[in-house]
Length: 444
Image 1 (cartoon, rainbow, N blue to C red):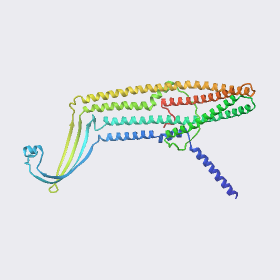
Image 2: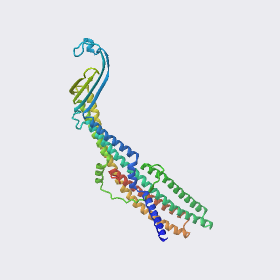
Image 3: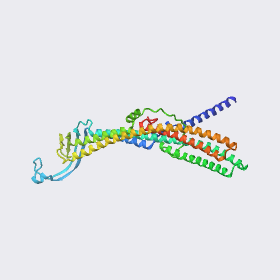
Image 4: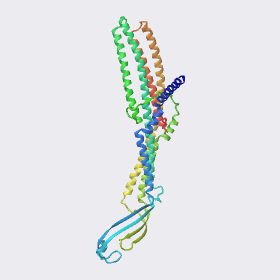
C-alpha cells in the first residue's frame, strides 16, 4: 500500500514537473521570436524564393553557351513537279536535272550539333557577359535577402519590446490604481466626517476614473501590440503566444569612427548596391559585344528514305561566322544609355553610403542625449517620491488639503512613466544604431 502511494506521488510529481517544463518551453524569448520570424515571415520566404530563382537563372545562362544537340525529323508526301523559283524559270533543278512529275512519301531525320566557339566576345562560353549579368543579379538578390532579414529583426525586436513595455505600463497603472483607491477611500471617510470638502471628494473620484481609463487603454493596447508581434512572426492573429520577461542591459558604446567603418563593411544595402553597380557594368559590357563577331560550328548527319528504294545519307559540317558591319548607330546609342545607368548606380551607391553614415551619427548622438535624459528623469523621480511622502505626512496632520496629496502622487506616477519611456527610447536608439552598423542581434 505504501509503495503504491509512493508510486502515485512520484507520478504526480513527474507530471507536475513535466507541466512546468512544458509551460517553460512555451515561453517565447526575443531570440526564439527572431529565429522563428526568419524562417516563417512571408517577406523572408519571398526573398529566398527570388534567390533560388536567380541561382537557377545563372545555371541556365551558363548552359545556353554550351553545345546543343537537336534532332530534326520530317515525314510527308509529295505529288507534282518542283516549284522552286529556279526550276520554274529554267525548267531544271539546281542539280541540272530536267523537272518532272514526282509522287511518293518520304521520311527524313537529321541529328544536328551546334558548338559555339566565339560568342559575346568569350571563347567557348567562358565568363560571357550574359552569365556575369545573371551572377550579379544573384548577388543583388542575396544581399536584398539580408536587408529583409535586418528589417524583420528590427520589426520583431521593436514589436517584442513594445509588448514588454506595455506590460510595465499596465503594472504601473495597476499600482497607481491601488494608491488612487486608497486616496478615494480616505477622501470618502473624511468627507463623512466633514474634514474635506465635496470638491476634494470629487477630485479623488476624477483621479480614480482617470487611472481606470489609463489602465483600460493600456490593457486594450496589449491586444493590438500582440497582434502586431504575431504578424511580424508570420503567425495567425489568434495564435497562442506567451512571451518571457527579458531585461535589457545597455551595451558599451564603441567609438564613432569604428561604427562608421563597421557600417560601410557590414550593411547589406551597400553590398546590394555594389552588386547593382557591377550588374550595370556587365550590362554595358554585354551591349558592347554586339559589335563582336559570332563564330560557331554546325555539324549535321541527315538520312532520307522514300519507303521503296534505298535511303540517302548526307553528312555536313560548316563553320559559321557573323561579323556586324554597320547598324546606323543603334549600338552606340544603346551603349550611351547603359553607361548612363552605370553612372546612376555609382552615384546611388555614394548617396547610400552618405545616408548610412548619417544614420550612424544620428543614432550615436541620440544615445548620448538619451542617457543624460535618463539620468535627469531618475533624479526627478527621486525628488517627486520624496515630495509625495512629505505631502502625505502633512496631509495626515491636516496641514495640507487632499488635492495637494493627489497632485503629488499623480506627479510621481507621471514622472515614473517618463522615466520608463526614456529607458525604452534609449533601447530603441541602441537598436537603431545596431541596424545602422549592420550588427542586429541574433542574426545568423
